[in-house]
Image (cartoon, rainbow, N blue to C red; front, side, top):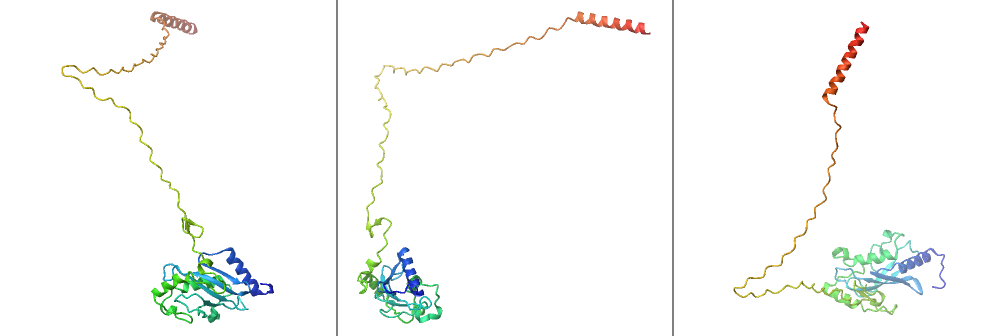
Length: 259
């Protein structure tokens, strides 16, 4: 990329998007500009899941104009897909065929995601320049062949440019690892207490008396001693009567002296 004018707004924007895609990769696509021309990008896109393109890997070019991002890019499919013609600019709403619909805030990532959304369209929505209608069986066959398709510029097959994401139990590009068995052996049953076998008793002989189990001794709780509170003895009745008589006589003498 020597000789580029890094002060150019288009160059700044393209280099910024290249860094963002490199720092935030997606399992659905890979994209990067060519080393000798940053205005030409090569991208590999995974076929949409649940469609006849599932499992396919499709390589295409994105050509950015010198006025980018104020003008839209052009897209050309390179891998045979049965959905888009190869080496032909595709007519989609975010490409150079519809500059009036392009927004400068959009970018290369927007074009890639938008192209993936156009794969499963049917009928009139799928009609346009660069679009073709192949049978579902043929598209499935091309999807399988697309994985080993090699770009003459990148010199790498699609599967090397966009490897399949590893599964939940696989690493190193899909190599399945056998997980160690976590099944524990059941613990042996606990030995039962030995049971004495029944003894044969001859006729006429009384069976032995069963062992008597000593009854638990009941320990009597200590008795609480009741404290008897002695009530004070009342004075005898005769003494009370004598005191009352003395008081009456004294009161009578006092009243006589007063009157």
